[in-house]
Image 1 (cartoon, helix red, strand yellow):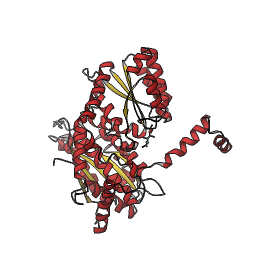
Image 2 (tube, rainbow, N blue to C red):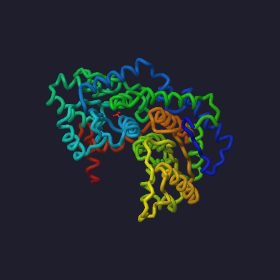
Image 3 (cartoon, helix red, strand yellow):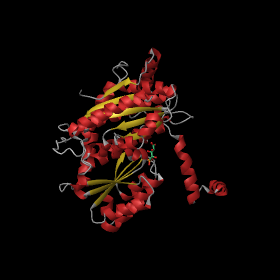
Image 4 (cartoon, rainbow, N blue to C red):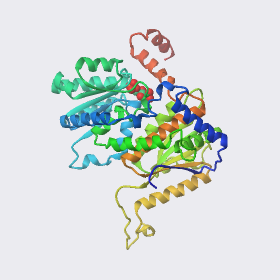
Length: 442
Ligand code: PA5
């Protein structure tokens, strides 16, 4: 197996010809631009449209930042955060910080309002040389704007305004927003987030590619993997050849049968933030108009010791999609122990990956027996090319799935509600009447 494979055989589901045709029709809508939200389809051809000049410019900027600083602070939230975090975690050595050769670090800020997190981040970088990549499409999102104000002040205090400006790169809209105005005023280098790519589909723009290149990720291989999946899911591909159409059709068929929650599960802890990215992608794209599969995540076998009981025997509205990695890094074998005090000699000679894979098989059988349909996505290994394939696969399937569900997968009207309340309660000018109404309810 050389590429991503989708296997729904444990879902015990027969798709009708109509369900297959509808999935292909939804895919065609993404390509001909005649569906809902068609102003935000820039991601569909993004991998193939990224040319040498675009990739080289990102790599050059990342290299420049690495010569200026050993620690790069990446500031953003939601779609301006999760993609870079997910890919970095999937590809990085989780113990890299302990390696003596590790000179550069990518740290994240602006993805929360926690004073504890922010204070500890400042403490951690006190003795380090820093640069910042600040990412916001709107340029006005509160969390990253606050983090950037704090980090900018620290950088200007340390380096002076001019040198701080050399160390800051803004990734934002071409012309609008407070961040763009600030970047123009201070002379920051900037990268543009295309108008037609929404936040949660933006990991293959400079939003994801610049911080990833700064973290040392091979962004060319990442993009190449995404290009392969772009080709594999083109409108010319048949239903059987198109894994994204198949995944979208199967999950919608399950939804119609009453399976309202999808658990994205993996046996590799490095995929934790990939699951977080997937949750945003599917949650924001589908959860509207009183509809949508609720996206949940789990890391097995860890979470089998916490969520396993519910998954096996709780309310029957769950299905599970397992991201399985065929070939993992390293070689860890269980040695025989002459005393066998722990009773584990039956595992002697086996690799840990074999035990993990056997756990995966046992769990799939147990969960399907317990009424949890099981879908499987297999990757040959966790490298940049395969993660690129996985990203585009999920994006394409999400667009198709949203259309099958009958929603616009490219808007997010619901995320404004909390912001309105927060601004009103914090006293933002223009929100006085709303503040009055809310205070009466407190
Ligand atoms: O997907 C989305 O649109 C959101 O999650 C945004 O990415 C998030 O709110 C950050 O927005 P911005 O990039 O404008 O700061």
